[in-house]
Image (cartoon, rainbow over all chains, first blue to last red; front, side, top):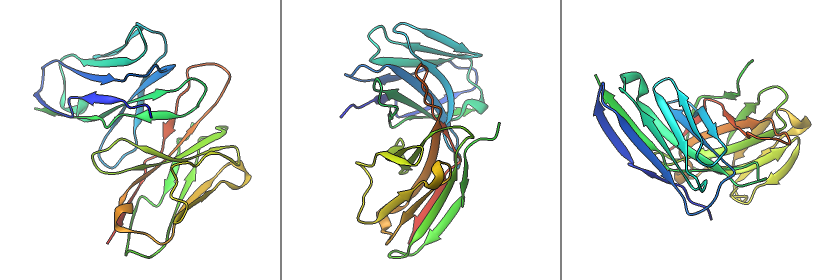
Length: 111
Length: 116
C-alpha cells in the first residue's frame, strides 16, 4: 500500500504570513496533484506536477515535486483568509489511472 | 464546460435503511470514480469505472454497497443496509483518460450522508 504522509495536519496562521506544507512518500509516483477542499465542497484541482524537480507557480502558491518523485511541497506567500481550506495531495501510480490521497493539511488563515 | 454533478447534496437516514447517490460526470470523461471521505481523512477510493465496466472495486464493501454505470455515463452508488460508520461524504470524480499525461481527476461537490 502506498501512503502519502502530509504535514502538518493542522496549521493556523495570521494573514500575511508565509507557510509550507509537505507531502511525503516512500513510493515513486508518475504524477502528483494538489487539491484544495472547502467545507461542504468537493476537492478542487490546483496543480499537477509530473517531472522530478518541477516547480509550478499559481499566483501566491508555489508547488515543487521532489527530484525522486516521492515528495512534494506547497508554499504559500502572504497567506490570505481565502486560502483557508483543506489541502490534499494525491499521487498516481504509473498507468493505474488512480490516485492515492494523503489525509490533508487543514489551513486556517486568520484576518 | 459543466462540472461533475451529484445529488442529493445531503441525506440523513436511520441505520439499516437504504440510500442511493447519483453522479453525472463531465461530458466525454470515460472514467468515473466513487470515493468515501470520512471527516478528517482524505478521500478513499470505493470503485472505478471505465465506460460502463468496473476496473477496480477492491475497496467496495460488497455486502452492503453496490454501484452501477449503465450506458457509460451516469452512475449510482447504493448502500443497503446503512450502518453508523457509513456516515461520510461520498464524492464522485471523473477523468479523461488519454495516452499521455498529465492525468487529472475532477470532483463533484459530494453528498454528505449522516446515518443515525
